[in-house]
Image (cartoon, rainbow, N blue to C red):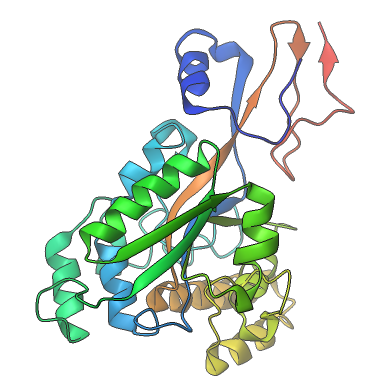
Length: 292
């Protein structure tokens, strides 16, 4: 037996790591997980508010909902490890933005950004209720619950609706007219080992679609869009990596989401399986996996 592309619950993962290490392979997925903020809605259309939220989020707590440090590094920008542009954008340390650099909640820094946005209390003090649409099963549901609490710690009033993972995408988060304010269970995997496939579908404003939309924050910065369109045409590997790294840093500076982990895929096998993982998608390569 082997698992498919659905991750095991954190409790099963912990058991495997403690007593059955030879039956689990943790492989960089080539992707990451985000809590997307709808930038078309106030106050998420305010850069300082978004930076305040990012500063005030405990990414360590989010990572624990999926199994802890074993399942990936805490993200400091968007391009994941192993992809062209990752090192040029700062590697694991990232570009060095203060609101993104601390894996723990920095409430003092969050208060500074909220005050810059005009909230004298150092927290969001509006009366608006924000719709968050999230997964209804673990581990996504746990991530959403932790995220909800952290938003509330920052002053936001959250109405969380939990649905199936498929519905979360197809009926809500992928449909701009659904007017979802926060999507805590979204993320992206590389289509190919090229940064264009990671950043262009998800942050280029030209790719905002009425359905099946993957630019969840609805980031639409015309200068950034033009920069991406120009970077697509570069063919020299070094120039291309540098260009997309600069785009990565600019997206990170805009804080369209809380990007909290570059996760690893948990591949579990029974003791009588010789498992081989495909490096392109981090899942079992069935053509090469065999029985002992």
